[in-house]
Length: 288
Length: 290
Image 1 (cartoon, chains in turn brown, red):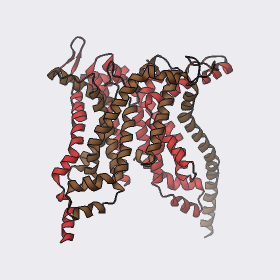
Image 2: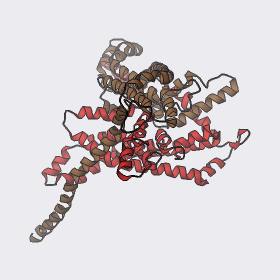
Image 3: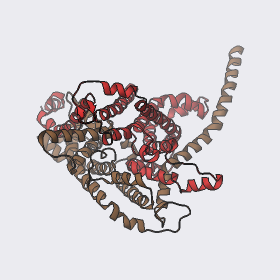
């Protein structure tokens, strides 16, 4: 009896020493880590906002003065790639919803053999490196062109195809989330009252997932609009998307004009996300 | 009667096959035709041989793969990419875990703002995210000016390994925080209270109870960050400069500049192979946890 209490006292003293060390380190570590995180994520962004107002075509400190003029000059330099990105993104929204929403309904409402494989296939463009998909689409298009004479490269459609691939998994996933929260009893009631499966989908399921579809459309838009890697091999002279045009510009120089372009895009994406936030819980549905 | 028909309807074999095909067919066909078939065809190119005049000759040989894994240049790029991915992942974990942990624990009304600010960078293209770093590190930037004033000497910040590391780490950090957050949320926090109620200090309760339970999620997050870093394109190109080679820029260079399609295919499939292997490990871990 006395021996056990002696042993336990000794261990508890030893533990207390390491505990004190941990306790002393825990708070400073958390503060340093949070500070580093804030630095990594936001200091470059804030500096971009600041530089975009510099009244000089290069970066030096202190600046000569401040101006808004870079924002008014943006359209002259980046108007064309902006329009390309906008048109591609709108086409991608329509097409990815057309194929993604039915796929989401099919995956969530039916059980069948091979369902796991199909769901893995539909979500796979999220894990397969976009740059590899992009290059393989280009080489396939060139091969088809050589065999049949149908010109596919250098077109909007090849960009749209690539972007639809990476937007569709998001549409499918958001539809699955939206349907998972929806009470199936309503559909079963409709079915037992004599509605055919197609009528159930058109009259009950789709109206119920309206919010999920709006979220999916917004996601598809941003994914396409901001995608760099998928566009790398699919752009062509005269058809360059905004991220690729920005990259080409940055390979030459960084200046307040490109900072202004970044500011506009950051604010634009933030605005879309704020709208999105009303339909899906952001943090939860993005990383599963 | 109604009950019986209802039960029949719920049976898996009563799936309306035609309707299911109609729903899933288009998406499956698009992914198969625009991704699976092109990828298979492109994989085939890796076994062709390269010729300076004809560019690509039909062949069946593994010479390109042998060359990739024996040539010091290619091996060097692969090892540098893996090294950068490893460093960025360690940095992100060290910074991301405490942030994710506090995000789960906090009851603050600013929590949703914090989540929003972490999600926002995810949807901004890699190019734009590098602009910020170029502005911070460029010659003539605030940091550069301060260093020159204080030390009198100029240290080149751009086109360094550190610049690329910062670029990749800041790109990966939001993904990592959100993945870690969902992993930590999966752990029952009452266990911590139980451990503390039994006399453990908060720190000991964390390391003995919470950390082991959250660990599989931490591994998954680390793999995600590693994969993202393996595929990084904008950060090495813009922050590392023309001589800093990593796998994704190498792919672009082999295809666009060298016109060596067989080698481009090899590079692409080395990236993909590594990525899929790691993702496979991650999902196996996730399955075991469930």
